[in-house]
Image (tube, rainbow, N blue to C red; front, side):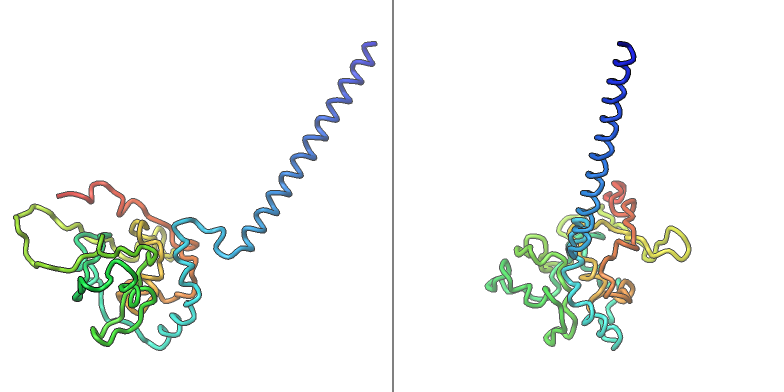
Length: 226
């Protein structure tokens, strides 16, 4: 009787182990299939903050051709930061903005969605990293004064240092936050980009595959001081 009980217990134990192996193998295979399907879908396996990078992927060859031809703005980081109250702030509108025009609609995007050379200003139009946000003047305003109405102790923080590297020979880290700036090519891969931060390989659109985010620079609370 005792031996029969041991045989029954052993049978059920072996059956349980076999079922566990079958279920585990099936789940593993399903995960592999799901992973393969994800990798087969362009952009489907990207992080939310990287989605904007791939929106310009179709223009990579065009951008690369412009670089090889030496076409690009001669503007440096000085003018770039002079249009911002602090690093990471929305830039001011450096040209007249007619209030009677459809500023809140798609008028701005006629120049700033895909960039290009603007004869009127003899400059390249920067590409907006967030063309889906149509109320541009909610954040971007024209300059109405060059002086301060009330004296302020505000100190403009220094911009992040370019070319930061974790190790010698490593790709530079991303020295700023990505909020509202998740389309890397709009600032780094167009002819309007400042020469110091203009990338030499705009055709490589998966930027964060090599460039890691350094969130100790722009997200540090001590930067926002008066």
